[in-house]
Picture (cartoon, rainbow, N blue to C red):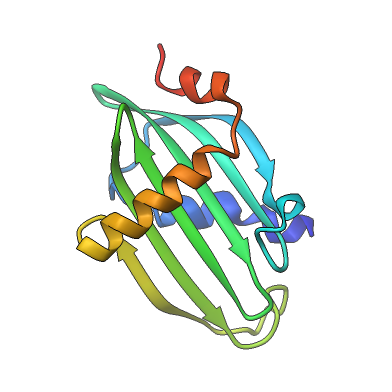
Length: 141
């Protein structure tokens, strides 16, 4: 199971919806969502405080692993959600198979009406994974 989460940070960073290189991020909390029966083959959610040149915001990254695919969510927010993305990736073979081929099968962002509705709902659910004090801390200096 550890190998599944080893690449989590790299995957989510590559999929960050802002498209801007992150100057500094501090992980505030990690939650195993497998225990919440939310992911078929495992899953994890992470809360970050992110600092870029001249601005600070919070980021939640969530990955749901399945036998033949994964779903990755990235939410950037301050007082309100300002960027979000969901990617569905399918693969032939199992996640641990080094010869598997990955295919992006879906990409949803806040830019579409469907994305705004769905991702806003997913964001609100994802926020519940984390301790309220840590959520508040991510936006403070």
